[in-house]
Image (cartoon, rainbow, N blue to C red; front, side):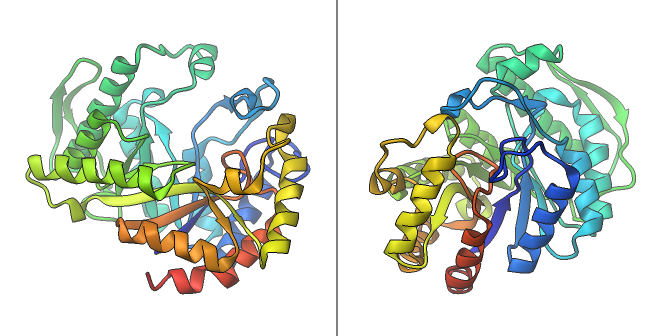
Length: 335
């Protein structure tokens, strides 16, 4: 199993809650690479509120993902660089294809392209994007995935869809990876999303709280859909992100959880018991975490993406990543 880190790239992402800066994002990626992580990931929001996570509703700033990945391509050497996930409604697929090809070339073929339908109404409306219904947003995602496949093909692409139109569109230079960077669709895993993954994508990603039992049900659905579509289920990469907390022993784990409770915005973890919070996350001592990882590996998960806090793309305790890297990752790499 491989490991990715959800990079801290929001105003709320660091232990002190300082405004996001490029220096912090770049340093976090370099540290992840030094610790042995296989990949680093950024999300796609103009801004984000913490109200859904129990915190304040004030907008929190973030970097733009594609330009951030382009810069990280030049400041890292080995780790793969991924989006988790781009909102299909923010970029015309032709512009997206050009940007993706450029980042993949800059990185020497290290880009993973995660893409989803988008969900945060406030940012769509604030920047003048049509939010639309869930059906309409998913239609845009479907068309984007199909059109990207055409644009990374051997010749000019033409397309007439409900949302996009191409007339002999031509993307050159092509990405370093052939035929394209791996494309993962992101979402909870309804039948329509899993069908899109089975028909047109290289993988499926879902985050941030899943028990093995609940995840197994979705994987079973994906495999059945793949079989109906005439595709080998093993060809669809399974990528899973989980909130993660690892302690050297039980006492250390409890101390780290209490620190996380004090840090959690808005007191969202006040009164929450550690064992209750851990049920659908990657939490425990190295031994327990390896047991949980083995359950997910048995279901076919190839990469675990770590969000080192109680909200996405945060690292509240950098030393915890060292515990994970030294006590868990070397053994899990053999799964």
